[in-house]
Amino acid sequence: MTRPFFARFLEHIAKMHAHQDHSMHFNSNVLIEFQAKGRALVESYVLVLQRYRARYLDCFGAPGFTVQKHGIDDPLYKLPR
Image (cartoon, rainbow, N blue to C red; front, side, top):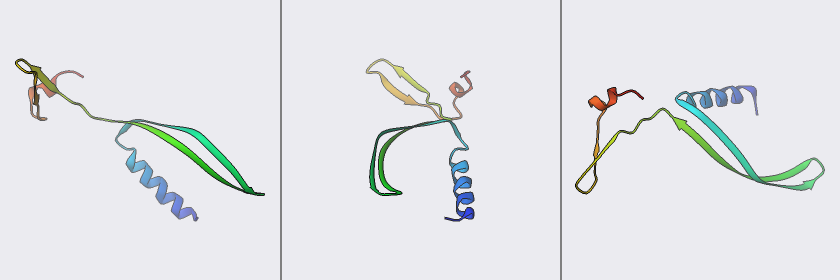
């Protein structure tokens, strides 16, 4: 792979993470099978936790605990976080 490929890849990743507050990757169950000198097949699982800037505002009330969705122009959005 060429250096321009990696530059484009990192540029893409930077754009994908621009609006993330947090990103963690957990690798587990790593299996390494050595096939020959200098060559191995590796299998692993990854759990990714990412947090984006988002906010949910819901209002619950009786009877029946109905859920009311609120738009961004709603006064509830002016409440402190």
